[in-house]
Length: 131
Image (cartoon, rainbow, N blue to C red; front, side):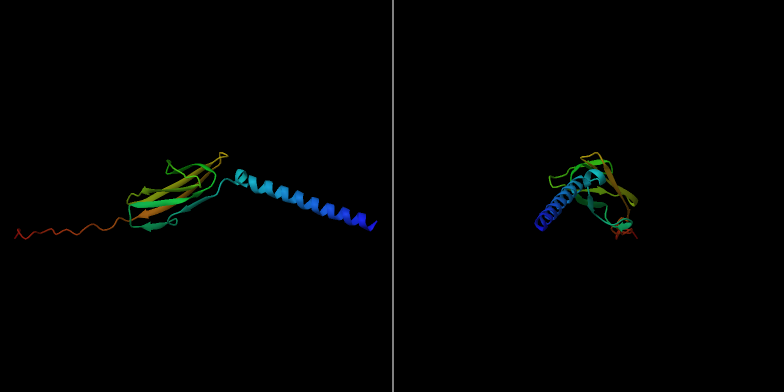
């Protein structure tokens, strides 16, 4: 009798582990469908002041079908990496990075940047020929 209970317990434990593992694998594979693909952007932080007119933007978006920066479509490599940039106007700028994944879900990240143009070259208003 004890051998039968031991075998049933072992079979029950193994079956439970297989069922839990199966449902865990399903949950791991559909997380992108439920929550959207992860979007990681490498650029300046929100609210930063920069002194250049060009702002490089790069990042990773796995399983993304389309990446756009300020509504302009950017190319993505097979690994999901993208690399592009925007030209900033002097003053307050808004940069929006949007991703559409293979399930039709869309994610947007908005970064606000203040661009302060570098000082211009000093000019001499008087020439040696003026007296």
